[in-house]
Length: 135
Image (cartoon, rainbow, N blue to C red; front, side, top):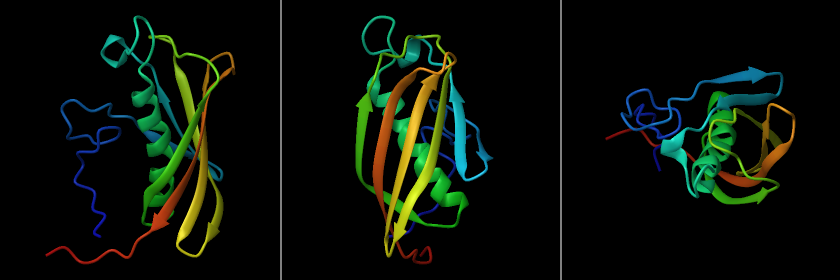
């Protein structure tokens, strides 16, 4: 498997015309982003689609591994919702590494609103891969 950044990632890719174009930053051992959903990101009327937020939770964990030079792909992910995410409500998403054991890396992430209320939590297992050179 070759993990290569073609800059078209739906969440962070600057070249993806329909992408979210999110920016990320380090905060110590955590990795963070901010997202304010608009009507394009809705599921039910006035609410953010759960799949959009799930993609961001996955990305904050996977991208953290990328910047830490741990090449890995999501193998399993679980998301637990605490409340809905209304359209227009800014969200803070933070991810961190919980454990590295051989090829398996366990990560977690959380999304909360400006009031500090948890919207969703995620746990994921990532499988480290050996990157082969591009053909």
